[in-house]
Image (cartoon, rainbow, N blue to C red; front, top):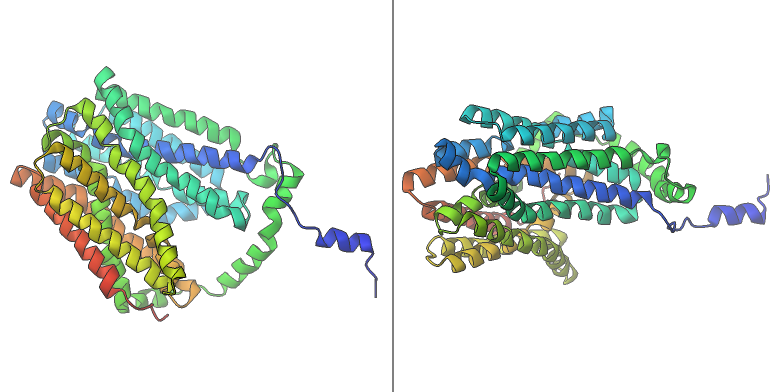
Length: 443
């Protein structure tokens, strides 16, 4: 038997430490965060411009509801093939195409003059943006070891809240200075700058010219273990029959209904908040640009606190499922109270304060709801399936919110009923997660 020398043993046992100096992987995260911010700038700019567009082009609130909703349907549907395409054709190519498409479409939005053209443009925007997060997740998976993937992912996900927070003041300032047509042109053009940064910075770690041997070794230190896990996962493939059987379990429906209600609420904010501030509370367009950002700033803080609360519940001795579902239920219940009071608020200051509180309490649900799929099933191979089913329920809520809200504003002449419905749905979500979802899915 061949004896190993002390030098060989030392080499084998020597741990791979975090490299110092320039670390390309954090440059990759910086570019992903920039893309995430731009993604939400382009996603939310139409809702900022909606009051002026409706006035200039004589578009009703019902018609605007259909326009705003037309983004969500293709975005939801295209998430499935988008993930496959990224795996098949590569992260850099698909992300580059995606950013180019959504930036061009954002520019073209300024030239739309009819309902049909707005809808077509938003459909293409939804299709283009669907690649963003599957590609970003794959990029962080390629560039980060296990112990840093959570941090890396949370950074670029936080960019979504940043995008929502800065979109109102930036878009409003551009509209007031140059008009809404120019606003779409400028915001869309920012995407091309982000695309340039992506093309320059990103490549696979093994092909990157800037990465050092030390950083590459650090990135790759978990690869053998991951390959073993992937091989095991392939043996645990979920068949279509098993997937359909998930719908026999009542907790699945509780999660779908609960997330439908939560995402309905979220897309009410994204699509109708600026119009509410202008039409219902009488704020000027310039003031709306600042005030509409406050809920999303509060929301960024709520996301961080919600994850902490759910972890504290688990550390107190409750199950992981209890930690997630109780935090979601608490956030949804508090949000319902805030929105139901807002429906009858006559003071603009009180309304803005309540809406800001509502987005903060809603955001307490964000981190636990993403983690819930990992805690509600007994067999790990069903985690992705359960998560996608819950997300599908959420996307349906997000798709219906702009349409239903626009119809109620048109028929009722105001936002009171729309806010009441949104508040009641938030209560439904609190009940679904707090009282109906009490057991694991036994699969």
